[in-house]
Image 1: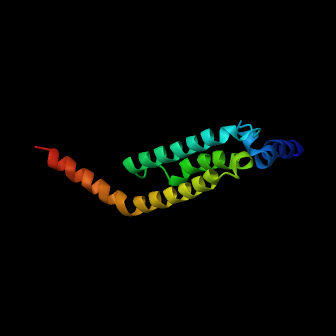
Image 2: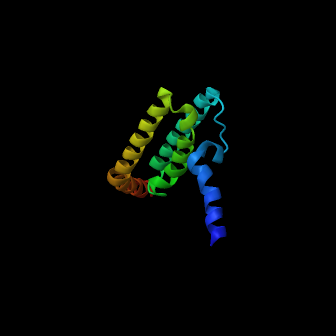
Amino acid sequence: MIYVIGAGLISAVPQIFWPAEALGITPDSDAHCPTELDALRADLLSEAGARVREPGAQPVGLFLEPWDERYRALAASCGALPSYALLARLRYRVEEHLLRYEADVASLDEDTRRALDEDARP
């Protein structure tokens, strides 16, 4: 039991107190911030576009969880930048719109696709 507790502490403590290092991001300089934040933005919008093209493929949270971990890992070195806060706002807006899209529009989109397939048949 002591081994299990020790192993849990060894793996959990660095992820809680030093998340950037646990993900392999070095917080030594702010020079990487614009590049990392832009990569997060691109990943977020790319995945959102894929979810609009194929709604309901997986729950929205499944792709946002690893994105959130990457975002939080940048808090120590990039958290003071305005783009860091704006990226968080963008993330939550995208999540809201995806959830609303899947609830309201996805079934209509599927009906439209089926109707188009039927119309295309001779």
